[in-house]
Amino acid sequence: MNTTVSLSNNTHVNNVYDINHTQPSVNPTAQAPEISVPSISSAAMLVELSISTWTGRKLDKRASKDVVASNHADAGIATVNKKLLGDSAELSAVQKFTANARNVHYAMTMPWSDTGLRLLPTAQFFKYQEQMTALQQEYEDLVAQFLDSYDWSIAQVHTKLGGLFNPDEYPSRDSLEHKFKFRMNYMPLPEAGDFRVDVGNDAAEQLTTHYQSYYADQLANAMGDVWKRAHTALAKMSERLDYQTDENKKIFRDSLVDNVLDIVELLSVCNVTHDTQMEAMRAKLEDTLRGVTPEALREDSYLRATTKRAVDEAIAALPSLDM
Image: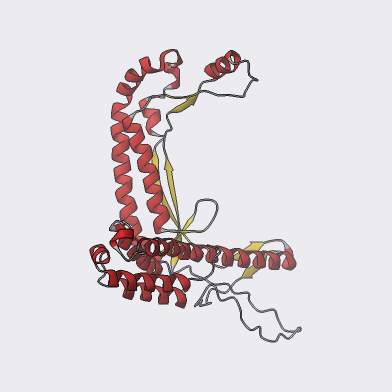
């Protein structure tokens, strides 16, 4: 028998952290109601960033055995990994850029699954697409520069590696080019499921309950990540503004204000559940920082004190997330 279990997707969530609700009375002879979970499929999507980069490192088994033998150690206790291109500036630039691109990706999305999928609010899509496409182009330019210098780098590293040099360990330029990839994959957020599996009604109900719990947990985790980012930025601002005289003056960069302004935007675009608490926090921070500049905070002790007080009040109003 092919069993179909459908979950309603019309539930509107005002606050993902408010899980207390009143259960209606149930007639045991009545048909079981549909199980509903929060649906944010129209407010967010899933995105996967896939970047692959050649490491330029190689395990040298012969050198590893020589090191172990010369030190009278047990086999496998030590290994020798060599940089095939030494300190290639072009390869290093690609690798560092890759890390930066991932950081931008993480900053503009929210956690969703352990497989690398991230939650991307619909309101953030065009900005995300614009920035990541620009990063993709820059990445490809850096890879092209590295590939152009590849043969020269091999010639230069030959003498540096000495007896560790092995020409067979260097891939051809054509095959090496395929080791560099930069892709964004978008997919719709699965709605609260439609299981079509031949497992019987009881098992189907268990699957439904499991998915409902999973969906709720992932959504709470995604929203909790936004709150944690807010706490980090606000706590940093509070700590940097905590002085009254020039004798105990603390140095802070202009980014101190910019980082909190970024949080204001984050609280807006990432509020996919229409959380009233998150919207209230966004409005409070926007009002607090209206017209505030780093220069004014450094020079005006009264503004600095009132801003710190407002920031501390915002921190105190954050939900408890074991931060």
